[in-house]
Length: 212
Ligand SMILES: C[S@@+](CC[C@H](N)C(=O)[O-])C[C@H]1O[C@@H](n2cnc3c(N)ncnc32)[C@H](O)[C@@H]1O
Image 1 (cartoon, rainbow, N blue to C red):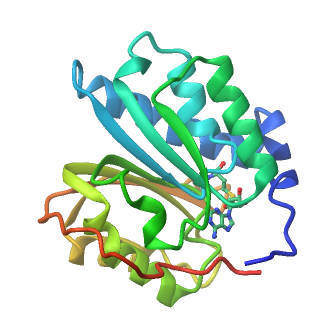
Image 2: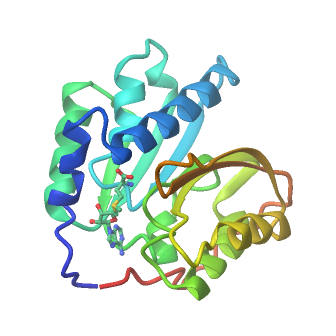
């Protein structure tokens, strides 16, 4: 799982409000905020796969008086990103959130944190093989509570896998709520709602291996 990419430096374009990465982040955050607004007064569970520094969820919750009703597990492999996310959680007093320093491809990393009401897969599907994308989508019913939402991102650089991603999500019991594919940038952001039957979490298994 060692990678040539520096996943701490990968976050630097977030410092530029106009960067494509920040534009993507703002879309993801808008959908997280909408998701919260549509479920007032409920306790909610979130899982973030390969969470990085956790900016999507943490920045949304930092600005909300109802952050206390959210419990979340952020799963991240790079210890520097884990440290940043934990620091932000402490600074925001987001007591329901934890960061697990672990392999998000390993199903055991989700034990005790699922079924989740929101699964965030930002920056995951473009960094794993097509077969692993399909396997991860097929396994989502093990991570999702009834009516859960999945927010995902994926580059549309050729060959564009997003038509297949959307078809595999439909096959796995998801209905599309939104799909953003801005013309001037390669990223896309999708939002899907789970209408299928949740499945118990397998005791062991590998969803994906990050590309090195
Ligand atoms: C493209 S970045 C996305 C970060 C974050 N989700 C975002 O959108 O800002 C991918 C992240 O996955 C992390 N990562 C790589 N392999 C991983 C693994 N097997 N399990 C958990 N995290 C992993 C990297 O350290 C990096 O922070």
